Amino acid sequence: MSTGVDRFLEQARNTTVLVVGDVMLDAYLWGRVDRISPEAPVPVVHVQRRSARLGGAANVALNLKTLGATPVVVSTIGTDAAGQDLERCFLDAGLDNVGLVRSPQRPTTVKTRVISGHQHVVRVDEETSDDLSPADEAALLQRIERIVSGRKPTAIVMEDYNKGVLTANTIEHVLAIAGQAGIPVAVDPKLKNFLRYRGVALFKPNVKELREGLKVDVRGSDLASVRAAVSRLEQELGNSATMVTLSEHGVYVHDADGEHHIAAHPRKIVDVSGAGDTVIAVATLALAQGLPLDRIAALSNLAGGLVCEEVGAVPIDVERFRHEAAQATLLP
Image (cartoon, rainbow, N blue to C red; front, top):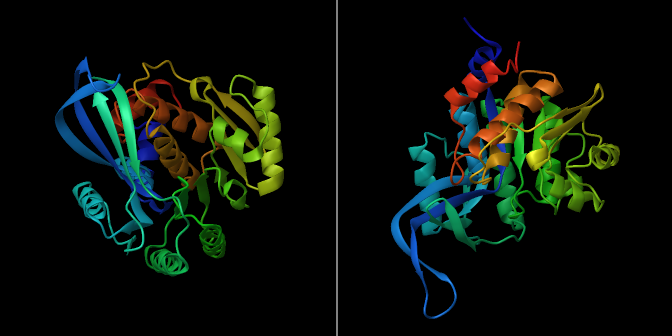
């Protein structure tokens, strides 16, 4: 018998989502620690294997594809070897690379994590956080306009990691394009342009981003402080709905119809890397289907918790998601 989550996943197959934002290569060195270095009080990791995964906006797209949707990523990457590796990861994952704009002026963002067992030992970042140059910005906007015109996306995700792709001008233009086409926009923000995303359908900060973006005292354990911060946020942005992820305290959502607090599911948390990417992917698909905000929050909350049980940034396990969502009757 078909369940509500079955219908949700089936409708996802008819959904095209434009994902605009910072893509990155998540590189991993997997090994074991047997001793401390004689040169300094640091662990010596004996590397046993290497791997690479899609990160940032690319991980959002990978989650969308895993859920059955058709994502198209638009971002700027370098002409370096890491950019070539990132393109290979796109193709290996079955993702379209038509939206990747190459720039000789910028490095491709690479985050290298050293893992021993299930322990995250250290992370090394190779990146720039400078805004795109005017020429790179113009090339990116042209690509966005072409893809919106040709692919006619059902929804847009703006995935901001403060790496310079989502400039103030880019944000303004994407929101104008979306408004003219009647496309709902979901935003996963960062600090730099936190209050630039005016009038979007769904704004999804975590509690730390909410605190820093508004410069207010807000804690996930204190719903009154979250409620007050969201009220101020919506006055500033004029967004239709807000979803605040509260880590172990679950998710808080608010729109014109009211508020909801969804408690976190009990999980064995191994790694929170990429959980926000999964949350925004599920939320965007639910938004595109016109689901009520409490159901958007419940599905997203479940999905984000599931990926925290895995090491590194991984896409959602659809069958686990289907099973747990059906068991919890998250959709009628």
